[in-house]
Length: 230
Image: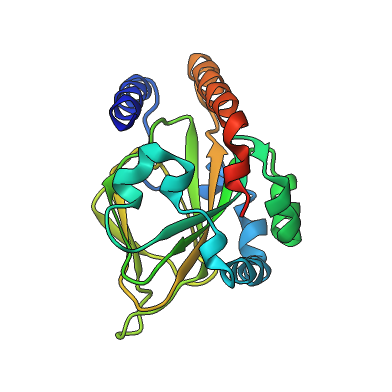
């Protein structure tokens, strides 16, 4: 399954890379202007995420949801757990009900294709990898970002070999088809909101291809939606 996923992802990237050019870090005013609404509400979202984290063992690990992601999720003995609120346009209603403030923000943003709380255990490393296709862009919003002994945020996100350290309430809009990796170098849980957003300004053929890819993934999720509820 992983080899098939890698082949499909590599093929999709090859096609998109020839039709869409963009830097790794994107201008939120162009690609996701609604991010300011999320950033203003980060404390409320953090409180909802931490309430979920109080029973963290019930939250699925990423590779439990998507087995093809095992190479980057189960690569060590530390967990990466993901509480999914929306997956490729499909709302996970039991999870949304547990996080009403975050759910309200998502409901106001039809461009948000997927949304989840991401929990990285202390010491967890997500190895270098690339997202599958350029029809969406990624947004990270820091909710509970622990600090290193030197006082700096200790959850490190490398994008195209450039280091980024988000603090509580910080956000970053970026293209996840560039190589990236993550390390929680601290002894505390790292919590972030991850959003996937429809890319703005795509050529018509790329928009049509993106729609078909998302539609196919959505259909594939129908029989597995129960896994997404914690």
